[in-house]
Image 1 (cartoon, helix red, strand yellow):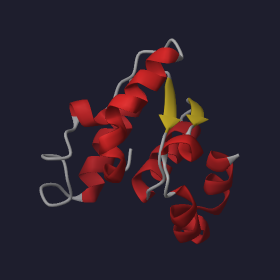
Image 2 (tube, rainbow, N blue to C red):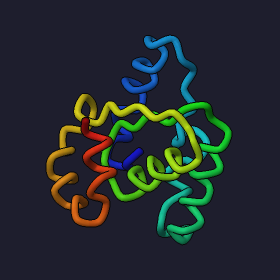
Image 3 (cartoon, one colour):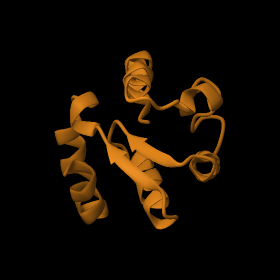
Length: 113
């Protein structure tokens, strides 16, 4: 999940529970205060995130950022079911989709459909 959505963590967790699922929220396991690009190379953080995805049945995406798009692609490429709630929770999704469309074109389109 993009760091900019950390204030929506509780809302997102409650939403997942309302859908009768148990959330594994990355900020609980990899707190942004410690696991950030000042303390670890981006590659290492992404590897940790991919490891979390490996342990889950599904990946739900709530916001657009390069990391969350790469997590989506990883999940899809490893056969995980994916669900997108970006337009519901990320008020800046349009700006970020415009920013990343050239790099992640089809993935952005899939995430937003």
